[in-house]
Image 1 (spheres, helix red, strand yellow):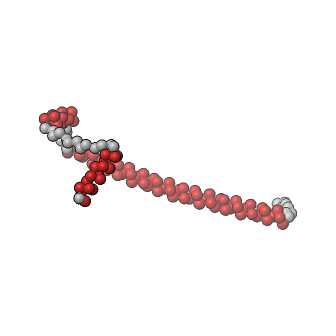
Image 2: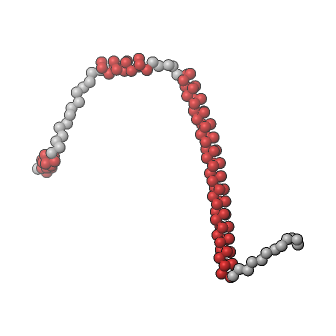
Image 3: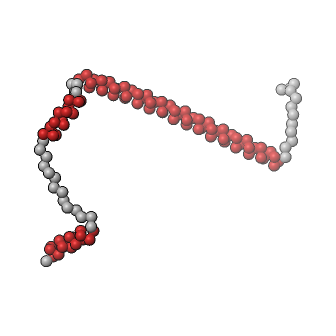
Length: 121
C-alpha cells in the first residue's frame, strides 16, 4: 500500500448521507435477492422430491395394472355389449306413470287451496 497513490475526495455532509443511504438500500436489496434465491432453491428441491415420489407411485401403479391384466380374464367387449343389449330388449318394461303437472301457477294454487279446505272442513 505504500507504493500506491491514494486519492481522497471530499464530500459534503448531505452528499455523504445520500451515498450512505444508497449503499444501505443496495445492501438491503441484495439481501432480499439472496433470500429469494434461497427460497427458490428450497422450493425447487421440494418440487423435485415431489416429482420423484410421484414417479415412483406411478411406476407402482403401472405395475399393479399390468398384474391385473395378467390375472383378470380377457373379455370381448363387443360380445358383452351385444349380450347386454339382448337382455335389455328381452326384459319387459312397465310403462311409467306420468304425473300430471301443470305449469299454470294459478291451477297449482287452487289445487293447494282445495287440499287445505278439505283438511280444515
